[in-house]
Picture 1 (cartoon, rainbow, N blue to C red):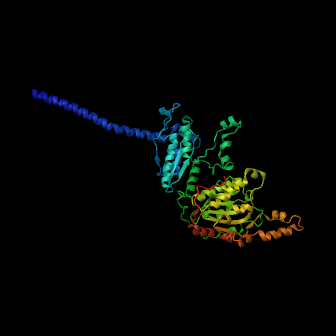
Picture 2: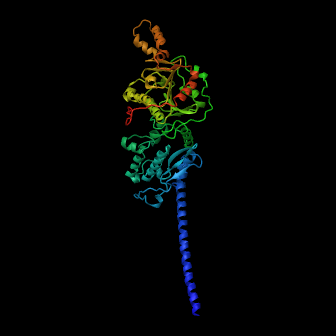
Picture 3: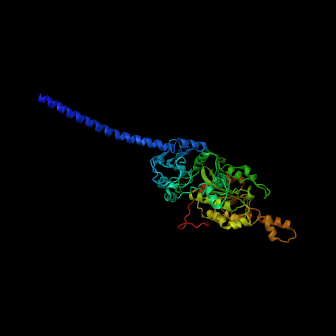
Length: 502
């Protein structure tokens, strides 16, 4: 009987121990499940951004979400996100409440590929606090920028933000300083602030719309119909660029013969020197497959800039546009050209310059605006550039503007002139009025001046142009020169930085 009681007691103890073990096991097993669920819940919340209602509102405005933009821009399946769980650290003004915490905060960051080439990316999420920049937001962007520098890859920023997050005060402003990136917004202060400070009535579109910044201010380089159009063009633009300043200009397979002649160029320049023609026709005829990606097409139209390819190699192209202000250089076109030349030089992209310039635009507006200072920027940019530089003078090359447009005097590698080129101090009519003032036979004097100077020979005999070529052979000559100049190396004395006339 006693033995039976001991067995029962032992069984009871075993039952208690087993029950305790089961409880402990359940506890141990449930913990990872709970963490997994939290992880998945956070991921789902991050993917939704500010929530479905705000996503719908974004779509109703004709805009894609931050993640949709990334998905469209990058190669399918290539995006690797970073810092999905980062949240803002602000506790003021009710920001510590759970409803104001969004995993990833107001920016999506990571890396991916465009046509197989590595790129880091951040895309501001307008559905989360209007895409405003917080300390955490800035931290995420700085992290991928540091990673990109480490591996030598570019960073693409897709901006859709209302500015600094007011609730965070100085921390959000510090975030802007930490990023130190050219993230131009449509306006520094909105219409309401402008009204209160200057009493001006202005709409958002007038103050900082696409037309304003692509035609008047020059803040934006291109404008597009919608997000999809912009991102597709961004993919195309990316293909022209090296991944970093340490890489050479990209070269891709070319099916357009490098020695292709272009007969239409032999007659493209009108016989009358005052008659306009379209410089874009020359550019399209010379480059590979007529594929030209123009930069700032609606700003300072008297100068054309953009990217093309010659025998598969990316090149930067600068050209005066005779159709607008006769191709004169002014303040805006000088700044536009200088910025582009320096960009190409920074990323090892050869420069091709087409010249038809009657001079700098005269007038008090230009002089008061500092045309001498701004024109010097373009001169400095060409002189400073160490990439291969090929120049073709198609017609007029007058005065100081001739010097500025990548002349031999600014260390141009190869300088060509077409038979229609006129390289002189100024046009025949103006020169004759000064030289032969009061002369009895002004017409004869003008013919004499044209015979002496309104042709490429005076420059050719002095070595200021390397050859006078048939226009139809321009593509073949440039392709040949770029092959030779591919190994160009220039050693400059060390200096802390250049001193471009700003």
